[in-house]
Image (cartoon, rainbow, N blue to C red):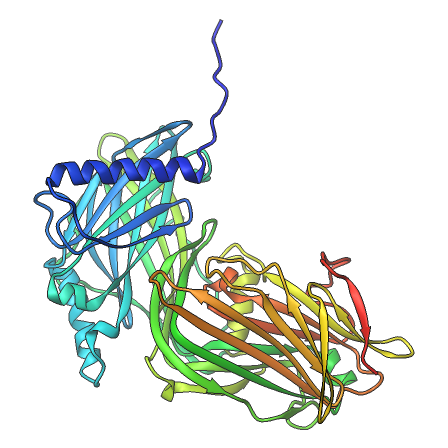
Length: 516
């Protein structure tokens, strides 16, 4: 009788210990302790270690990718198809590929140098190359029988490292067949199963283009045939926004609001993959600005439903679709699977390109909603908090996830709500909401912890004025980092119910405060 073993789940601690043993082997192989400068985790998909000195003999400065299979209680090196791309300011470039347990890509790689030169030319505008924190895009395909797994990873690095030949980037990638959903290996001709992205034909404040850039050195011929499409966007990338429904326009005429933001320090934009979520930081930039919008009045400046948003002008971002086939003269052609990535490629490093504009259904905010609705990222809008102004004979403020405090101001009583339950890949801290009857402020404030030891702050505030008896307003707070990798929040305003029309919402406090 066959004896069946009970499944053993691999915990993050077990993975961490396994990685630690890998590091020990690296140290033993070198003979001296390598200088580890930083280490980051990409969910349960991988770990990236950065060294200032050689961690492994005969490995040049650059990128080393190692693939490990997690199957039950076993963690072991495994052969896989490793395909590496570099992100440029305006697109992606193929760098290297190979089928093995490891792949070494030196900074001297011709295609990688081609991308580095694009960043250097961008730096001629007066920005040091050390200010460009870009990334590599890696796809790892593992095949077992009639199943395959495609793991996408984004590996951040500083352009100056490549110029100075001064870093060793070691990526330990984990193909966890216990938790990553496999694709079925099926007979199919190349080009027949690629994802065809459908986008709105009418749009403004951004342009689209083919962002797959030809490399100086073409990829080698192998049995693995990757096909990649890169749909690029250039223009206004939202920094924060507020969306108003038709009901708000009709029912809350005279209500005024301002949308204010404060960003300071290193701000990260994460790449998001369908079925995986956050797969690493695609771009980082230093920002330091405080911006307050004009006061907008519903019924005069705002006359139709849409979104008001702050934006980074001159930004580039992309939707990358990756498909891979296996082609054999004896076995035939097989489709191994797809992966879809949303990533930011470039953000201008100062506030000269920051502005505010309205989106009446054809701008970047509408595009973000559209991408989520079509499940290109496989995530619906992530609503993390709710608040409301409801009139039931008296005007009340509804608090979902936070206690209320109040203080007297020259324009009336100001109420503050601290919102809990915000914990994402950005380590967002508890948010804060405040309101007042004469001068009403509703805001979100968050703290981000970057991969280095420094910390950065992003705050977004939505302030309301002329809140009168009878005002009906339902406010849903969108965690944009969980959906798009954007380090911010968005606000969705409705007159009769929360965004999506939920029958009920999960709240910690679920209380009402009279503000009249």
